[in-house]
Image 1: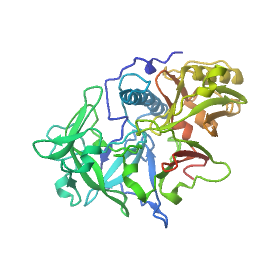
Image 2 (image 1 turned 180 degrees about the vertical axis):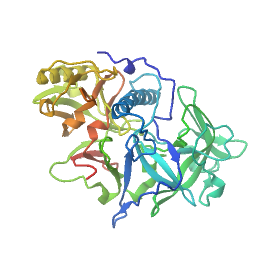
Image 3 (image 1 turned 135 degrees about the vertical axis):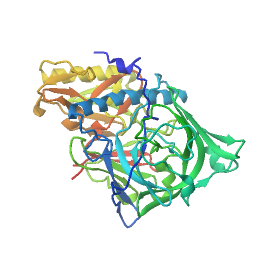
Length: 445
């Protein structure tokens, strides 16, 4: 079944760069203490946006509806990423339809600190939030950040070197201050000034002089719960990059299934990664622009003992494009090139030998009634130098009590390794060595 969402489907809503949104809330949600180690490494909690512990949790929605919403956001996000890559002259094209990310963390912004919910997104860089005075802003129901009340807020002048190196920045001739302007595919935008501010990942883990955007003019269907964007990508303006030598380019996360009332973890620094041992597999990060995204090289996929290479033509197998797949915690599904997807789908059908049914929501392509786990073949992702053997929960999702579907989809734009495939793996990034490592782990234990 051709999925229309991957081709020319358009949703009019937008919520920022696939999105990393700030949610300012009151202190009735106490910030959790980060776990610190002797070498200044630390760990913090992550919350899936649809888990009961999230401020975005909607108790009126069923588990099935929340899952479907996650799956739909995957397609919207793929459109955004494809558009971003197209602007960098890479061979991907599609309409821009960004949407929410998936995992939230709690941070503190400014001095005195304001508690903030942020979606942890490895697919964006720029950090911005709505600030007073908001000349023309979208409505938000939580506290608006007031830079005048923060003793650590510092505006950046035009002659500051930071202004020249940031994407989307320029000099405002009227104020002689560094400004930024971001626009999105549906006409939404954010304009404001570039500044430096203190960001705390817990009351005792502070990063000073973090470059952020302070928005005074915004427009778009961002939603009243959101207040801005924070990026954890690989670009210079991301929070990961700005942490600098404190974390030595090393971070990891361990994601739990959002249906469980458990907490995921994100780790920063040398000892926080802890991705080692005989069961660890490691693959290189390809050096490709834009540096925002983490590009891996997918060579093929095995279904059971049958290996299916990315390129079926024997003469082309040695010419697999480096960095052909983005690993992204903000995308739920794993999206594959059409030929590889349909080969994987056919081999799964050959292994399961049961009649398929249609997804009642029309989102996923391969579904079965009441599929038991012992019928699901082992699926292995063959990244360059790393064979990642997936669990059943990484490959199939239960849409409702009687429908189980493959958590992969075809894409004619970009290949993305999504977060369902990463659940119960410790996924470690070493940006100094330019590697990503995977280790089977019971996350949330």
